Image: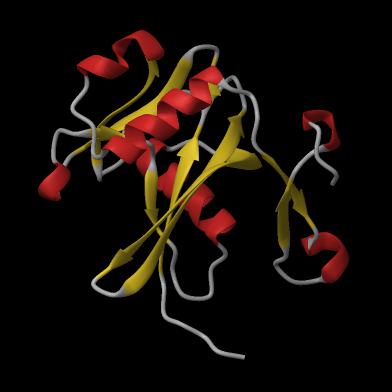
Length: 163
């Protein structure tokens, strides 16, 4: 088997009606720009675990993955860079509170999206698509039956595909 080093990033798409949970960056080249709660996958960490960790770090909320909304791929200095945006459900009683990496964490209505300074066009597109569609790849967690981290993201029968 041939392996390749790969840069893997993740984002959480948390939807409430026509609003999406967004964060405003506190540091770095994207300071004061808006995007989804996001981050990198650590060694020995599944991307699905990383997205929940990043959501906790940036917004102090816990979520449950319900699907995959988008995947972005590109080459970065000759290395594949993959970015996975997961649909995440929160307990309705949780309210986002900004962590150290962000200055704001709040649900932003879709009508406000055009006014924001976005981290990237891709991030804007992911948020806009999530507000306008309920479709996503369904996530099935096989870890309890397999005894090790094992996630499947697949089409659901209710969306016309076969699981």
